[in-house]
Length: 307
Image (cartoon, rainbow, N blue to C red; front, side, top):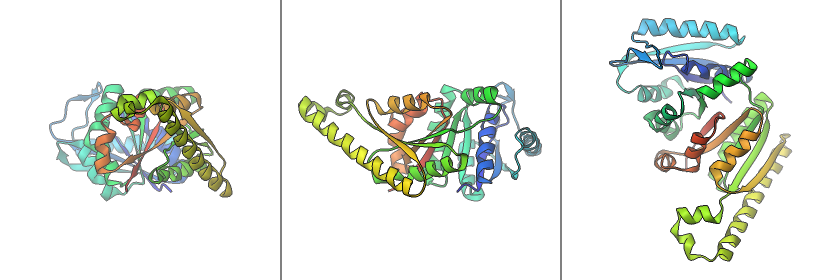
């Protein structure tokens, strides 16, 4: 259950595009929102083409004004708190991550600034520390997609929650997060797994080249059956709890298949489990989760997993 949602803001209208989704979720969960800004050491004069916040008092006034403006625009009834990190920081991402323990949010909502900066934000220490330390899941939105959503509907929404899984039990933790959100916003829950094709596996792992096509095909068929049984067991358990969900097992490139499914759904949220400290290195080197983040315009909830 989310009780405190943290939104890091840098003073730009681009970063502010994370606020409508944060308020939408906070309204559903009756949660508080904490707006956070870190004072930078030797800050640039502008950020994303706008004047950059340089002083603590200026930052406080900015967060208070943002709270009033967005609270009125979206009729948000909950509390909006603000926190300005006074000590100048040379690494704002690290400063935000350090405040996770102090502020204790259950969820961090942040917006990217386009494809290239999106990658830079993710590869930076913020996402790796937040997810690696396991203090809270991180909901990532692409600013251009968030802006288009607000323009079309006036407010964000989630109609489908897509939880991507494999047959490893550690990833089942992501189902709980997906279930909570789907219940709170009355969205349809979808459990999805993808069996890679032999050709894609062969390119990634030379060991597959030693197998005959018939052998590799049989192995993938067994994997598909295991996944269907795994998802069916969760579907049955959820049904017994009064929660309806659909399941799907597809064949192909996992990242492309998952993003393809989300693209066909109305107002999707993708939920992905990511591993902790050691696993994050692999995550940023081209794993399925990293590719989905790059390919999809849908909001993506990254759930920290630990063995």
